Amino acid sequence: QNGHTEVAQILVSAEAELNTMWNGVTPLFQAARNGHSELVQILVNAGADLNQTWRGMTPLFQAANNGHAEVVQILVNAGADLNKTWNSVTPVFLAAYNGHAEVVQTLVNAGAELN
Image (cartoon, rainbow, N blue to C red):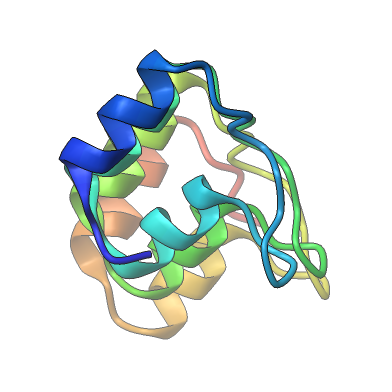
């Protein structure tokens, strides 16, 4: 949540469970929501579940909704589900709705469905 990469590296090295939920969300979900790209990369490299949901949303939804282009790129490169729907919308819809052009371009380039 707070972007403490050194702490995350210690915990990953100690084989902490990456997909445990706290207050309903995983560390990857929180890091993506808050735009902590270095932390997202650490968690992705360690094998965090890219598509684990909270109330139907994945970390990619959060990064796209908040305009975190670097985080979106990391998640896309790692194989996050581009076309998962939540309340009938996709990550590219949320990015477009909120005016995040760079995120929209990243998702379009990655093959996100537009309709």
